Image (cartoon, rainbow, N blue to C red):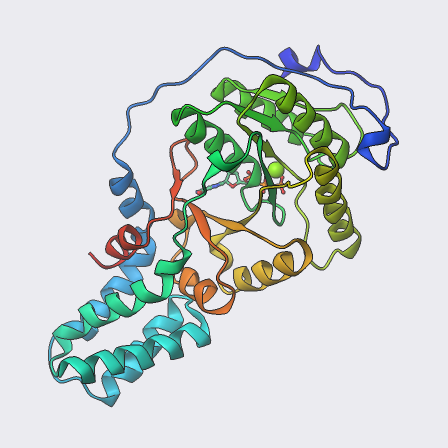
Length: 340
Ligand SMILES: Nc1nc2c(ncn2[C@@H]2O[C@H](COP(=O)(O)OP(=O)(O)OP(=O)(O)O)[C@@H](O)[C@H]2O)c(=O)[nH]1
Ligand SMILES: [Mg+2]
């Protein structure tokens, strides 16, 4: 399937440790195809994507908010519902306290009025995570994508490339996952869909590929570099050292870079997502998050857990596998899609 790319590969080994010492063997793919597809609106897809969470959370809440008095039993049930939606203990305790305060302040007594109070509390909690990524501050603006295996890094890069292009930006991809055999081809396939150049090496290290990509982007006046990296667990210490090195080498190519260190998280893992945010943040200093696969999970509440425990800006959320299924996080859209 990828024979087109294979023709261009170079088998020169790159036993380099620091990119500046070892120029990358570059495989470039300037490709001219695009795939226009008619699709439902983002709001519809967001709602459809969050349907599992909404079905579960929404139905349970509808039961609670149906009517009757606001009493201790009701708060207890609400606590269970929030925990089940994977909001985590900290966020749940916080939300309950906040909802109680709102109920007292507004003199609410009927359970049907609780929904508004909960929406307001949730909005105040997760609202600060809504900080859209401004890529216009640097050129090239270098984005380094990190995360565990299978989180959705490579597909998110493809989606982001398309998103940024639609904003009139030029994009270059760095195939920095040099661990997995098919990774480079996967990124090139995404490059093809998005009509973007991919900088890759047949072999060699991730840092060298990123270094080379930044130099190419600088020389060509490209707006954005999206650097893919291999998946790794925070417990794999040697791989965490390797990713720190990638960051250091990026800084050699562009001293104030990377301008965004973005952790890609799979929403299906629920509370584990919070642990991953903490571990990658401690190692690399995260500046943003991408939460993928919200369509496959009933655990959309994890955003509240992140907001409470390690509020790294949530730049984008993904609700499906197709190229338009990743968009900037909007907290009120998100809350509306959860509740309505
Ligand atoms: N349903 C759904 N699937 C997604 C979403 N984002 C990514 N995926 C799928 O998740 C799988 C893994 O995605 P990749 O992009 O290869 O993940 P990765 O983080 O690059 O994985 P490694 O390179 O192995 O570390 C693919 O099958 C994607 O199509 C999403 O928002 N929703
Ligand atoms: Mg990948």
